[in-house]
Every structure is written in structure tokens, then in C-alpha cells.
Length: 286
Image (cartoon, rainbow, N blue to C red; front, side):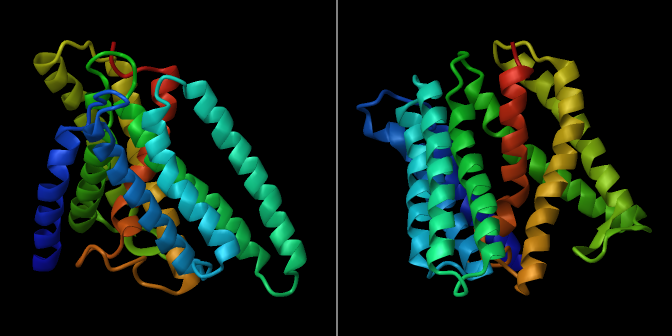
């Protein structure tokens, strides 16, 4: 526990200044790329952790294109923030071309590769890359003053869900949730997690309405908070399921006491994906 706390304090101390100066400052300003560079590195390391977990990190036919995409996607999100349709088209084109490329690798290396691992790498790595790039999208939404309120939500809400799920499980947990995936998680803890996440969402709306010139959509915040609490725990469980299937305890070693980046950001990545969809169709703030 002591190691976990020290790691968390050091990580927050190092990351906070980058979060604080996350605002886009113009395409020619070097500090404008500090924030997306952070998530480019997180994306790159997370993809490596996933490929290492499933045993494809040294298959250069698979890993090199994914490493390149992982590093480039968050940076390009900032560079192309005024051309989002073009960015989406380029991302879809890359995904389709890469899928065909993987099929070719499978065919020409038939009998030497595990097709299931290739499929898992494609699915999980594009999820990881997309989630990290989406953080930059949320920060750079064109509505004035809203981006700085949005991009922190995946981290705050996911950690709130995780914390209250843990304590509710310890206090009231009697029924195991999915023991084959996560033996310690309980139904009561899961319910407590997404209930407190919904409450946090509404409280967050009240706080930002008092401190910033925005009008929260409380219906979307409340219902979205419940959905975020559920999706956050699904993100945690799916990464745990992949680890168990691969027979590893942690994805990496970069965060002593926490494991790898995927062990720490598994929930927030899932929340980022959901929040991006909500932002597109049901804005949280007006």
C-alpha cells in the first residue's frame, strides 16, 4: 500500500503541470504538443504492454505498425483539430488497410502464427489507440471553456467508481460478481461504484456551474454518470480477463505497486470512449 501511495503521489505531481497547460496554443507553438505527447507515450507503452501480454511484441510485422499508430494518433489529433472529418477518414482508412495487411501476414505465415492472437491484437490495440487519441479530442472540443472540463472526467469518474466499488465491496459485499475474472469484486461493490459515480457526476456539474461560465445538462450528467460507472468497471474487467487468459499478473512494471499503464488506465480508457460518444450526441455542458 505504501508503494502504491508513493507512486500515485509522484505520478500526479509529474502529470498535473502537463494537464494544467493542456490548452492548444496554436500549431506553431511547441508547448501545444506537450499534452498530446504525454498521451502519445501512454498510448505507445500501453500498446507494447498489450502486445507483450499476448506474445506479439517481438512480431515486428504486427508491432511496428501498431507502435507507429499508437504514437502518432494523439499527436495528429492535436495537429488536425480543425479537420476532424479528415482525421476520422484517415483513421478508418488505416484500420481497413491494416486489417487487410494482417490477413496477408496470416496467409504468408500460415501455421507459424496464432490467428486468435492477431485478432485480439487488432481489436485491443485500436481500442487503446482510439481511447488515448480521444482524450485530446475531448480537450480540444470547439466549445469555449468546455474542453478543460471534459477531458478530466474519464480519470476522476473512473477512479471514483473504482474507489467506491472497493469500499462498498468491503463493507457490504456478499455476492461475487465474476469470480473467474476478478475474484474480489462483488455485485454490491459494483452497484456502489456506479451509484457514487452518478452522484459525483451531478456534484461535478454543480461545482463547474458555480466556477465556470457553463450550464450543465444534469439529465445527461446523471444518466451518463450511471453509464460511466458501468462502463468503467467493464473496462477494468475486460483487461483483467485478457491478463488471466494470458496467465500474467500485471501488464507491466512502470507504476510500482500498480503494475503497468494498462492496469492503471483500463477503466479511464473505457470511459473516454463512452464520453466521446456522449459529447458528440448529448453534450454534457452548454
